[in-house]
Length: 289
Image 1 (cartoon, rainbow, N blue to C red):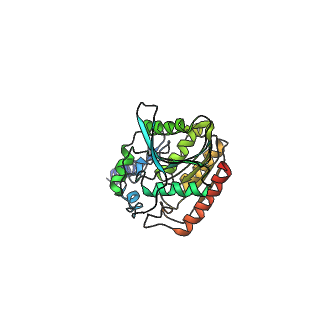
Image 2 (image 1 turned 120 degrees about the vertical axis):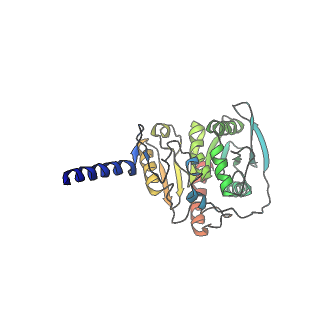
Image 3 (image 1 turned 90 degrees about the horizontal axis):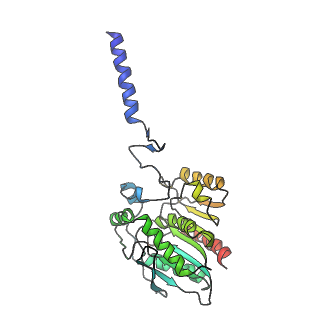
């Protein structure tokens, strides 16, 4: 009877270790009950329904500024059109900065930030903030998550390629973005190929595929936050992948929350944001001026 009891307990222990420990699929991606596996392509849509991730994005405060740019449209390779907020260099220039939105969409904050970069680059660089949601935007965190989940990767790539065609074959392009746009800053640098001269990622999920990273034509500046999603582990893996790809990455993890550099965010960190922006603008000046 004692032997039978011991065998039964051993069977229960094995079963529980199987059901409650992380399992591996055929692609060796760990599955846990708490978090989705980190995407290999830099997508952040995997986090969009996570209440904890949503909590990192309180509704942005309203922003009032005097806009000096213009809304433009341009054709895209998928046979439709896209739009963006455009500030044209005062003198003819082949230098361009592509600006990528947070998950809220192309709102006034991103337009204002595009203008800040434009003026700090001496009004001598063409700045284009691409509308990755095709005119949609929101200040509701749950709606923002749905927007980010609903976008189609091929459409987003088509918008970037349309922006590239608008800039022209001689354009030298640097990229900058935040959150969802931080990921797209890197993806844009990959998509524009030899025309890419720089990439600034503010707390965006990096592409993990080393073979894709090998095609980068520029170095990368990463400005990350202290968080559980784009975590220190994720960032250090990105650094390792970049090294394997023989590409240069300079980064800093700020002691601040995700979204710390958005002045319309109630959790805005002025000191961290000032330091991060100083790093970003000096980097972009070396690439574009």
